[in-house]
Figure 1 (cartoon, rainbow, N blue to C red):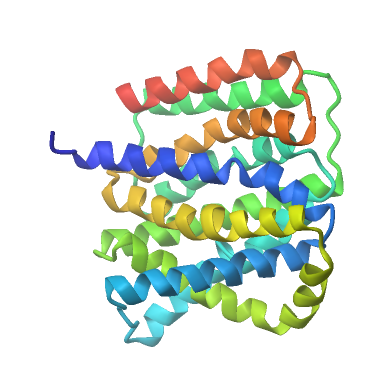
Figure 2 (cartoon, helix red, strand yellow; figure 1 turned 30 degrees about the horizontal axis):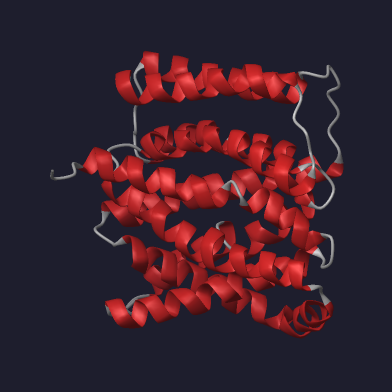
Length: 290
């Protein structure tokens, strides 16, 4: 059976969430032994190396204008190095599930940006299901009736906004015909260049880290970073609208909470069991009736 563009977008987004959601608990494992800057350098540089290898086999497209390089530099900052630093700094002090819930705000912020940048309209019923999905997220985060905003959450919110900008820039290149591997490769490459001045510090900490942290960083670099961004760009390449892809991020808190429970012993409360069906149901209805 031939896959439609819609099916390809759903497949790419689903594969992305599978590896990105696990980045929250695996990141917590690594951050028990290294600092946020070291983890960021490891993820971005390791991912860039793998992407360059893939690019060599697929045939490198070298950017030919300063404008192209400028966009890739912005992608490298908003989706890779700077994003990783603020995301990991936030993850260092808040639970993995809480971090993933804050990042679940990304689709709504991206959709608002897309309205102004691409005139990427969403039908009222689509907005309804976007809001109900966020209600599910709110149920999870507010279940214990304690709404506090620690500094870790502020860092994560900054990371969320940066990643929303990355999504808009990524979409722009996809609309111009750039393929997913090219976008992921050069955005990760420019992010790695930004990380190089901090490499000496990172190497010292990585060498001293236990094997569990090293394995977590390898997974984060090769799967959550490199392959995750390929899947994400692939989804954008075949999506009709930005929101068709970004709304899949609502699943991330559910996957992250389940993995964190097994990996870190962070047992979710009843809010997850109530909020999760709301999120999943909203995502299904959004993709069906948008």
